[in-house]
Structure formats: structure tokens, C-alpha cells
Image (cartoon, rainbow, N blue to C red):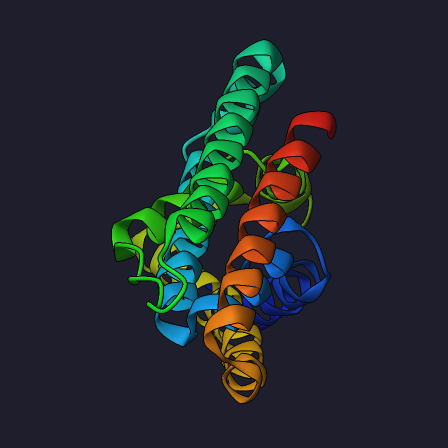
Length: 204
């Protein structure tokens, strides 16, 4: 895999990942509400979702996407519904918590699942890997080492961007945190997940 191909992939991914959207808003709100650890688990889910779509494109699933658009629409709706449910549970937990106690941290697997589903249902991600990527990289010529290099770019760029957002938001949230404000930030994070799910469901 030529260096300029990896650089082109890195630049395109940087622009796509850094552009504010459902993933960025979910990471920021979660980091401000619950800190860096929760947001990092969500970021890992986002990165693996990107990787899954890259591997799908590499193995010829872009043709399947065009042929079975309804299937991908169904996946998008299921992912959106899951995000709405997760956001609703976060809001419900904030109201159910005792006034004097802090919210217990959500299991990392739940945040990982939220990030993965968010990516799985995001039409922008689907278009990037299954439509845009094959136009500037000839995926039929990519060997095992080339694929490994491109996956490394995905982990480095997408993961780096999301973790940077998470770290900055967590630092800002830490300076503002008190029990009452934490509950409201938790509700804001839940509302953001619900909004992200709605955005994913409505986008085509």
C-alpha cells in the first residue's frame, strides 16, 4: 500500500470524523456527564463500527448495499431505535437516582454498544465506506498488509479524533461537576443519544 494512499485515507477520515455530527455530539455529551472512561468506551465502539464498514467495502459489500438498500434501511432504523432506548434509560436513571448519591457509572459494554450502533446506523459512515472510499482506492488491489495499514489508519484517525473530543469535554465537565449539575448533564447526554437516534432514523 503506497504512502500517498494511506495519507489520502487519513485526510478524508479526519475531515469526516471531525465534522460535528451524531457521533461527536454523543461523545461530548457523554464525556461531560460521566467523564472520559465512558466516552472512551463509546469511541471504541465507533471505531469498530467504522472498521466493520471498511471490511464490508473491502469484501464487496458495496454492491450488496446498492442491491439491498432496504436491508440497510432496516439496520439504520434498528440502530436508531436502540440509541433512543439507551438515551431514555439514561434519563430515567438520572430521575430515579437519590438526590444525595452520584450516578453509578454505566457498564462500558453499554457505551461500547451505543457507539457501535451509532456508527452502524449512520448514513454518512455507510456512504463514506461503501460509496466514496471505492472511488479513490481500488479495493480490488488491496492485499492483507494493505488492509491492515488502512485499518490502522481508521483506528488512529477516528479513534484519535473521538478521544480528543472526549478528553476536552471530560475536562470541561469535571470543572463544572456537582451532584445536581451531574444529573442534568446525564439527562443531556441521554437527550443527545435520543436526538442522534432520531437524526439517524430520518437521514437517508
